[in-house]
Image (cartoon, rainbow, N blue to C red; front, top):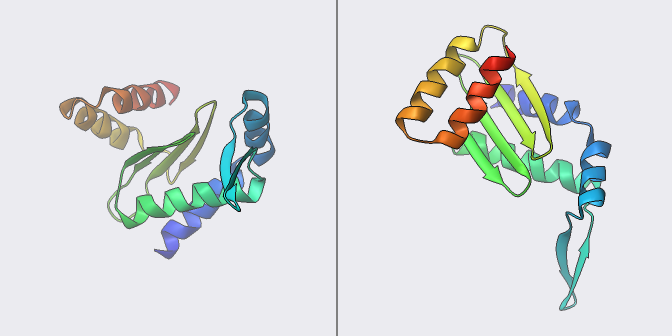
Length: 134
């Protein structure tokens, strides 16, 4: 679990949070808050954005998920036996990647094959794009 937490911390620290917040401002991606039975909409703060992503990544670890899509975030975690694997975090308009090792092409090819077998073509397309970038 400590290794997963370390990988999560590295992913979160690699993200340009000012850029993420600026996307929220420019595109009007607002969060709703209810206070005293009154609802407000505002741009989330950087700590709130970081906390949201951290919670999503911890959920992926706890539930042993390889894919999750929530709000503006899409997360792919390609695990390898005996290691952390590769984590790909996509903020609908930006893409951030943590690779445990550079020889992950084989694991991506295997994940692509599995995604096609499961007919999860959205995930397969993202994996295909990752392979093309390598």
